[in-house]
Image (spheres, rainbow, N blue to C red):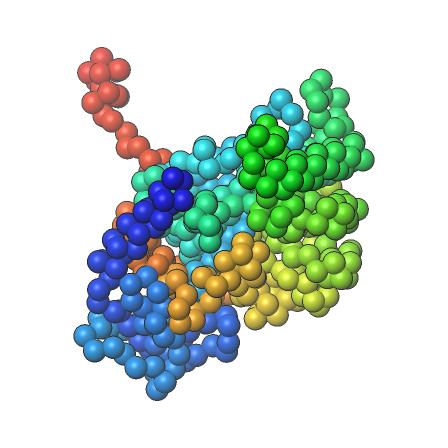
Length: 441
């Protein structure tokens, strides 16, 4: 029944999208940054029914008859940005009752009408991995969203090949989940945190084996355990483990655990990646890094370096970028790539870190991350070079639908800030006057 509903929902979305985009749209004259290949001057991007039809030089792209032609001369078009680690939507994960809560879903606490999603669109972000926090060793399941315009979570949530809502699992080590001195069941030490992970994944292995042996016979199945079920999905590679980690020894512990149990892992933050970049690369483990301009606030991040991206790139490790919004602002995501280049990362590597690398980490490289025919029509129109301080995001498009337009004052508010940009409600002066006894003082 669940798969039938997922199929019905997908068909409804597809029909609605197709109806809205019967006419192809061709953007001409822009500089294209496809990420999958060299930049193209005087390029043409053609989109139709939510997909990219063609992207390339004007001389090589045929504009379909009857297409709407948009002159984008002087502008830059690049793929929609992929943020592999964010907290937009106000979602939260597990509570203080246990250090590992894999059955908790951040999906159930996200407000897709929250102003933070508009800030992300204003920054050119089109795909995002929304995470629960890092105050637990395992704080729950993440959810992958497309930042479509929508009023309910199902309109934004991405689905995998099975029709299930797509997402990973959020884990953490280091200072955040230890809670030393806590009266609760929290680990207190790094060694204890790692032992809890081993204990729970061992239980998940045993649970998975019982399910396999039952071979669909309900009388032989173990009692359903939602927490072990989620961990078993990680063991089977169906869920990526997104691992918050900072110090070099914590980074290697996360790698060690992934190898021990065979789960796929993406390392997040990795403040000291520059110390163990070769080890990360040898393990073939991706890293999603954050660019902090003003270090401080966390002792274990005292050695964070803007050279992380360059060090990982030189070592040959897959490297992406993320905002960890509100830690860095979604509106300024492009600046993270500029900072990485300033510290030694290549331009190509930094632009890939904003797009295609993140798509790979979220198992979405066939749909997003580059301007290629057949991929989703997710793209950003910029006023200038992506790495320039002076460049503005002019428009953000998701699946061929414009979701942010800086020329629209209501949208521009979220890009520039000001009264109303951080709230979803307007001040009700009638209530205000009544509270003040009829006087608007």
